[in-house]
Length: 254
Ligand SMILES: Nc1ncnc2c1ncn2[C@@H]1O[C@H](COP(=O)(O)OP(=O)(O)O)[C@@H](O)[C@H]1O
Ligand SMILES: [Mg+2]
Image (tube, rainbow, N blue to C red):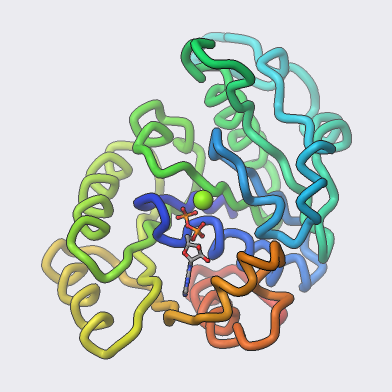
């Protein structure tokens, strides 16, 4: 199962992606977490020490060749994982999309093509769990980077601009051959927050698969540069993400 997590900046994509990856890896399943943000921060959210960043080798453009029908990986997936995946807590394997090294460098077309090719080949392992933590811009959708995802999860905060982003991204995702598009509510502080997101989903015919409460411990984990799942006091978030995974058919162990 390949899950792509999208939404407005700050909606909670990285927090939810990392927690879902850790919870699933605890079942002993193979889990690949792809940091698809050109401004990466999934490593720390997974619980890797901040200095792990220097050990992450971003996926190089040379991994793909252009062939009829799109870009494809030139080497077996397992070789690529052995070379580039950084081991993270609970056995998660972290891959990072190429990020710009310099100002004025140009576009990220090849970096997106590599992620797309990796996702395509991960389709040969339906029993694995892959999560792609996307950047805030709709580029992964407009470029079709996540065309090989099985599910696109749009993270919504209970305020208009976040919901508007979800509406726009859902329209783009619907044009990709992705089987299921779902919405997850995050930072829900009150019944009114939850109702606003539920009403929005009803109005647009979106499938709301779960709701993650606001939790002060998430910011505390962030400041301590720790994974939410490792910090006491964040259990309501972990439990909510576990429920979302289960609703998507992804087994977890809390
Ligand atoms: N459920 C939550 N409760 C409280 N704060 C949250 C929650 N989810 C995310 N946050 C905070 O919101 C900010 C953005 O979260 P992040 O996961 O980095 O979002 P994104 O990846 O969508 O930009 C972080 O400071 C994070 O700690
Ligand atoms: Mg993020």
